Amino acid sequence: MLKIKYLLVSLVLFLLACTKSVDVYVKEYRKEYDYLYVIFEVTNSGDLAVDYYEIHYKFSTTEGKTMSDWTNDLNLSPGETRYIDAYSYVGDAGVTNVWVDHVDY
Image 1: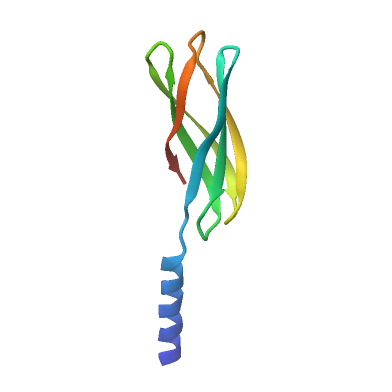
Image 2: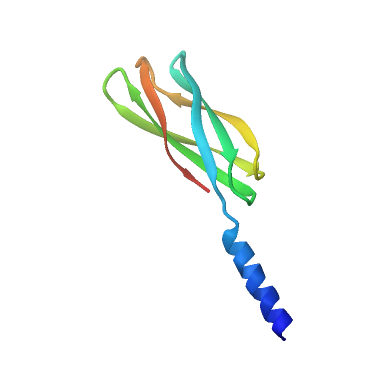
């Protein structure tokens, strides 16, 4: 009975130590016709696989507006890094800055 309790406690402690964590950075952005094109560098810095995640980002335009958009992807293994791209309609406005607002996973 003591062995079972020890195994259960060990399992609980192991599971509590495992984390999901996704780091996202804006690698590059540019204007392509009427669209903002963004490339994100995404790394799973946690111990567990991430099945689905959303990157919510914001950007400033030359017209003084702050706009937002999001993109998503699937199946990011622990330690894996990949590049995800996204397009956002901006019309004639230029873009002065892009940043990650938050990541949901």
